[in-house]
Image 1 (cartoon, rainbow, N blue to C red):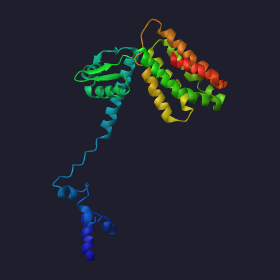
Image 2 (image 1 turned 180 degrees about the vertical axis):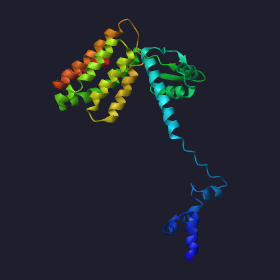
Image 3 (image 1 turned 135 degrees about the horizontal axis):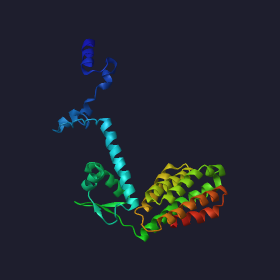
Image 4 (image 1 turned 90 degrees about the horizontal axis):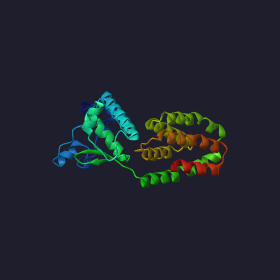
Length: 260
């Protein structure tokens, strides 16, 4: 009997001491949906094991999708992709020198973010945001961020705000370039850094998403640089108020900033 038990254990590839633990009770064999016995009892075949994708190909595909997503976001902010216009994934793929697949995946992400909408059998239409929608986004940002900034104004040491000065200066340089895309990235980086002092990662993520939505698409005009410079100047003023713990001044500045 001992040799028979050993032979059974060896035959299944399970060590002798684990052979008993590997036995499935008789009453469970017919109901185990993951086992081949359960499938056989229902006249079904067990599903084939899914092949494991090669890590290198996954990384490359993700990288291409990310690069296309960044390129599309830049095109949206700069107005290169025109609001109201429908763009197909194959056409954009040819434009970027890639297949339609990563473009389609990136566009689906942009659709989730509210920048484009799916047009069946045609492609994706760039969303045209009106003044009301932009005002609604500003209101939501204000409701979310103002209470946090007021709390930070009363609790964060002045030297911590001084550490964010370089980011505020970066937004000024970006604004002076007159490039919407460059300024959009610098602007969001500044706001992320300010909110990160709250220690709430979910807040930072949600606020950044709302901020990005408010940036698409941005109007084009002859006074873009002037508008961007005025917006960037408010960052330094906000840091001054936060360092002085001037709560009321912070409240006014933030609401004006979002309204702008």
